[in-house]
Each structure stands twice: as C-alpha cells, then as structure tokens.
Image (cartoon, rainbow, N blue to C red; front, side, top):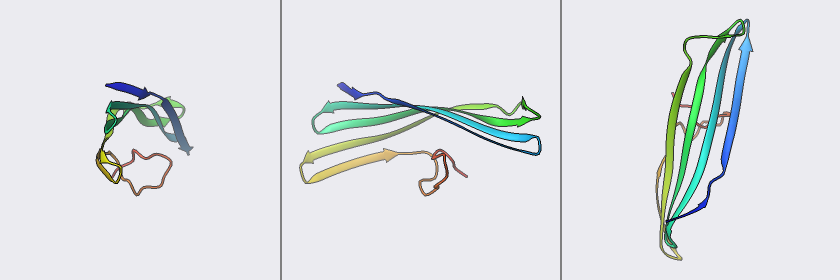
Length: 102
C-alpha cells in the first residue's frame, strides 16, 4: 500500500447578529492510498468544531465531531471504473460548507 498524497485543508466560518453568533471550523486531511494500480482509496478525515456565542463569549453548546468520508475506486480495465462512496451531509446543498445536513 502506497500513500500517494496527503494534503490538508482548513475552513473557518462565522456569523453574528444582535449580539449572538455562530461559528464553525473544519480541518480535513485528504489521504489517497494506492493498493495496486487498479485499486485505490480516497479518505477524508474531518475534525469539525461548531457552536454559538453570546456577547463575544462562547456558549456551552460547543461541539466537536470527527467526520469520515471515503471513496473506493476499482478499475479492472481502461473502460470500466467501479466506485463505492460514503459521504456525510447533503450533496445538493450549495452553501459554503458541504458537511451541512438537516
């Protein structure tokens, strides 16, 4: 098994109105494993922290989650590509954060 690459990304978002606010931060590590030339795994491990504020102080609803997502790709030939994918969140949501779910 070979790790092809392992970049990371960080997102920080927040909003405030009338003394109340909401914040979200997300660090994602993107890992691509190559098991062999025909089989690879794309793994995203995200550490998400979110909550609310009142008058510039954090409230007690601060939460942290680890969100795993992956795609397993198998290419038995040049004309065939099979993938199994697991994502959390709503894929059609077009907001600034793709982890959002109802």
